[in-house]
Image (cartoon, rainbow, N blue to C red; front, side):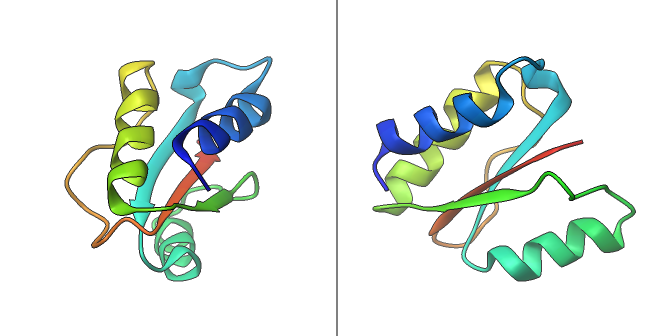
Length: 88
């Protein structure tokens, strides 16, 4: 998916809530990452992930939503083949 497509999909998902209620990240292995968050005691029932067109797209989308107040951080995620979000 492109930068615009992922941003639009995430905006639709979080509509009616605060960005600060959500966590965003990038990963190459979304199912493993979801399990890691769950094993840390986080509720991942509102999990979604999106395949990126490139690492640059993944990191740009992540930064966009971090700047809007989502939880998370930059730097991890390997090649950032996926962007994920979940309500935290």
